[in-house]
Image (tube, rainbow, N blue to C red; front, side):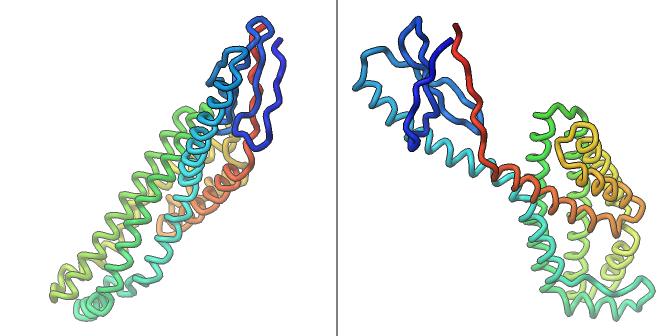
Length: 275
């Protein structure tokens, strides 16, 4: 077996394994919690060894910074999605009209809230972009843990949900434009859709809920309590006007869980030398 050569604390190199047969160390560096062999130095080459360590340290620092940014952005995108959607919804404040209301009152409401609807729609569209990134992050995590179809099911269900939100947002924008231009029939049609079109969310809620529950209960990639939460998301398919808000809350919870996971210090894995 090779012996371990200690390396100074401030170095990005974790340790060096010395093969007694070769007499030279193989330096190991930390990459996302895993140790990797990346440099083999000839015995007696002290100057060259020192220069190599400096170069290796510089490259390692840059790689670690970029790796951390990428690692954190996946979970953080879920929080950004929730923030954008919540703020966008608060600004647009929804539409209170009912299908039974007169066309003139519906048109007046869209006219008064047109600017807020557009601002809320812009933030919501930004949020959807962050949601897709977060779902991609979760899919990669789940596939790495061997969850099979559940990883793809969650991504597919999330994409369907994102598409539903985009459709609702587009209809709201059409209503705002109709309010500005006095198109009463278009405004009335938007209200009819808002009251009867929420079933568009049901397939995505069902797919996301089942996939996330399977990942939690079967593979334990996510905490059990998030699996219970996911069951509520799946049940939300029966009442999608409520289920969509349960899904947003689930994304917030899953994002926090993932942020806590990536914030924990990585544990280096010792790579034994042959011998």
